[in-house]
Image (cartoon, rainbow, N blue to C red; front, side, top):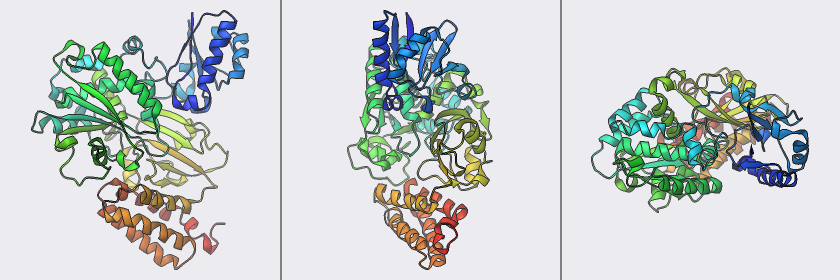
Length: 515
C-alpha cells in the first residue's frame, strides 16, 4: 500500500486539491494500484499547490502544482515509486525553501493526518502536556517566561508574564481564550495551523488552563474560516473521546472543557476586548483599559488571551525546554516567527525562521522577488495597520525592537509585497478608509479621525493647499495615535506616516513629481 498525501488546506482546495485527490483515487482504482490518499495540511509552498507527496522507503517525494489532467501521466511515469517527472521536486524535506527554515511550531503541518491521534502522538504530540502535568502552575509560567516567548498576535507582550498575572488574580473561576480572528491582510498562519495541526491548539489550550487555573476555554475563529471551524470542531470531539479533554485530562485530576465560538465578520473583534464583548453575546465594542483582561476579562473573570501562534510556541517550550527555544532569535525577540509572504510575490507562503533575518534576505531568499518581475517598491509588514517599508530599509532585521525603532511593527508576521507600479497615495488613503469602515465607533479619534484622514489625503492628492493639509494630516495622525482607545485607531497612522516619510512624491503627484 502506497500512501499519497494531498492537502486539505483551504489554499490547496481553492486551486483544485479535492479534484486532484479524486483523480488519484480513480486512476489508482483503474490500475488496481494499492493507494491510500491522506488529506494532510499544506506545507506552505503556495505557488506549488496542489502539492502532492508520495511516501517512499527513502522519504516523501513532492510533485506540484498538480492538476487532475496530470494524474494519469504521473502514474505512467511511476510517481508511486518516487520517479523523476517534470512536476517533481525531489524529496520534500530537501526542497531548499523548506530545508532552510526553522520549523518549530509548523513541524507537523503538512506531515501528519490532521485528525489522526496516533499520527499526532507519533510526531511528538502530547509530550508538552505530559510534562506540564508533572509541574505546578507556577513552574509552567516560569518556564514560559524564561523562554522569552512574546505574544505573536502583534503586541509582543511576554506570554509567561500574562499567564502569571491570571494565575495570581483572585477568584476560582478563570478562562482561557484563543484569539483566532486572523483578520489582517496577508496573514494565514493561524488558519493553516488549525487546519493542518488542530490537536496542537487543543493541547496548548489545556496547558494554558493548567498554568492559570482555568477549567474552561474558548477558541474564537473568524467566520471566513469555515474549514478551520469544521476541522477544530472535529478535533475537539476526538480529543474528548481520547480523554485529552473533559473531567480528567489524560487521567489526571485536571479538568478542561473547550468549545468553538465563531465571529460575525467584524475586523475589530480581533482586538482582545472587543472579542470578549462578542463572546459575551454583545456587539464587538472596545473596552477601556484598565482593567486588563488578565484581571477582569470574560464575564468579568481573569482571562488569559493568546493567539494561535503564541499557543503553538508554548508546546515547543514545554516539550523541548525554555533554553532550546531561547537559543533561537536575537535580543528580546526570542524563538521563531512565522512570516507569511503575500501580495506581488513570486513565491508566496509560510516561512518560519528565527528572528533576526533581514527583510531583504526574506524577500530574496524566500519570496524570490515580485511575481511581475518588476522592482519591489514597497513592503507592508504587520497587516493593514503596519508601516510601508522602502527598499532603503530592506536591511532592517525582522525583530520587534528593530522595527519599533523605525516606526514599524512585526505584528502577526504578514509581509505584503508591492512592485513599482503601486500608487502609495492610494495605499495611505486605504489605511484611513479601512479604519473608518472597521472602527467600532466608540472613541472619537478613531471614528471621526479616520474619515477626516480620507478627506485630507484626497485634498493633498488634488493639490488643494497641499503643504497645509500635509501638516494637518500629521497632526491628525498624532491625535489618533495618542487618543484612540485601542490599536485600531492608534496604529492606523503607521502606514500613513510611512507614506508621508518615504513615498511623499505620490501624494504630491499633482505637482508632476510622479506620473
